[in-house]
Image (cartoon, rainbow, N blue to C red; front, side, top):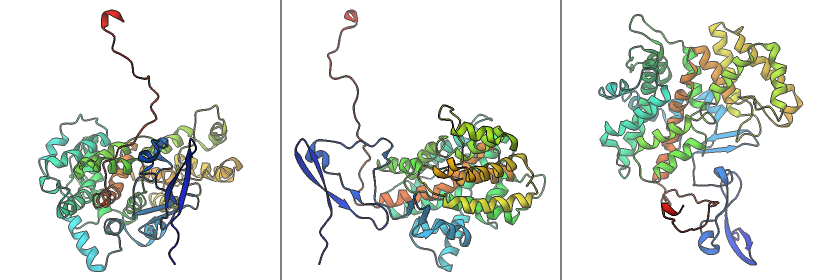
Length: 431
């Protein structure tokens, strides 16, 4: 016997409207309001869209209360422990874990597309020498549509595939070149005999004057950082990519829009803000002062790296990132680094403090990722570009999913207008 479809009743001025209720495979039910404006002449009001489902998706699921993050159904901690970034890329892009032959083919295609068009080198040199790497990345990625005309037709499935591989493959090269340009060093070409993370580290830290050998522990930590940031459901930058793509924009323009959104300190800049906070605290003996300030509602200071917009429990990515932090810092022999000591003691005290426990302000992924990247030798200006590099595959996966959606419509949010009502124009001499 078929179940009776769920509905929700909404009464406005004595008139009742029945709204369909949609049930997902995971997560809360969703009230379908698509016909509400036509039937009742009202909009819903949801600043920030925090209670609005704007799309169907089968890619990533988050249960913030339970601290769960799933990519295509697989828990993030299992993927971070047992998988590697390019395998996770395949999973996000195509929906299933690859066979041995499939991952070999995928890795070959990515590896052999890592070089960028040689004329793009001139594009980099058009930026000021002190340009922020994120500013450079926004410009260069957006300009890819001027260099790769054969993969901008979104109606062609093969061109969509080519664009997807190109973006995953070339983003580490672009990010590394943005870094090298910012510090005045020569660009380093990618090498096909290295894995994805090792190639990126070499392009960032090697110089022509001497040989550079990538440490496998650092490479593994870098790979985990990529994996843990690969996708995160309908966040601000992903929603930006989807909104841009809803207009039919080419994939390079859409990803550039996502990078621009990620640049905001409330989104991609959180790990940089966290590290800067730890340096501001400076020493372990000052921690009580800053904890008291964080509790003071009248003090604008906030503990960065604690709590999360979505997770109301422990960030599942943070556990894996903490493990990587311990491995990297032990390898580099900097366990006694003052910033690290502040981080460890701040974490310990916050987890024992009733105020933070009650509000579930646990350390998040940004708390540890900034420490790792700093220990590796990256300046804070590179934290967000690395985030963008990792998130590119998530943006592309969401873009591909949306392009294939038969319900696709151009995004058009509505508003609660609070301006003046209609009035007549007054000639300038009478004002």
